[in-house]
Structure formats: structure tokens, C-alpha cells
Image (cartoon, rainbow, N blue to C red; front, side, top):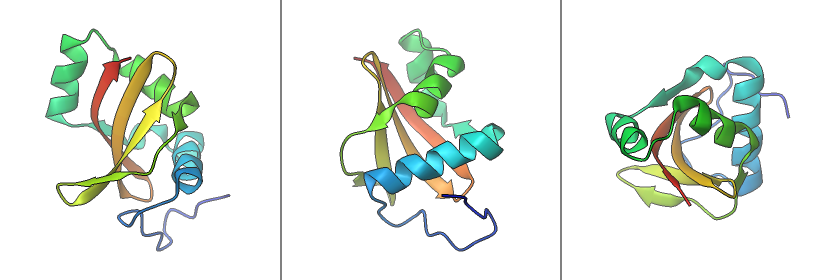
Length: 104
């Protein structure tokens, strides 16, 4: 799946787990700098001794195992490895916002 970042992909609608995973992979393959962190995410990461590199590694290699939750106007996806969970939202086809992260 190649994503044309100028296309009209509606990432604000509910995506299937496979589709969300593919979009996330394409973002990392083309423009990994378009991942941002909320203030809450940065605070939680600091409290839980997680570095941005830890979170980015989860986003690159983790799995989306469940359907997203709809919270505060956006779908939130949990990307998981055996040790860390990251919650994210897609804001644009090429922009991911990390909402929070924790160690499992």
C-alpha cells in the first residue's frame, strides 16, 4: 500500500487494524518526522521512564490488536509490543499524534 499523502484518505474515520498498521508503516517509510507527542504523552513518558526512541520503536514494530476507541473526537489506536503500549491518533494521512504510552 503506497499512500499518496496528498490524497483524501479519511484517517479521522474508524480504520481497520490492518489498514491503520499499513498507514503507520508508510508514514515511517516516508516521513517519520511527522510523529508528534501531546503534553500528556511527554509527561507520562517521563514518569514511566520511556524515551521517544522507545515509543517510535513500538510504532515501527508493534501490533494493533484491537479496534480503536473513540475518545474526545478522535479514534485512538493501541500499538503494542510485549513490553510497551502506545496510544495514538491519526490527525492527517501523514501525521500521527502519540496520546500516551506505558510499560506493560
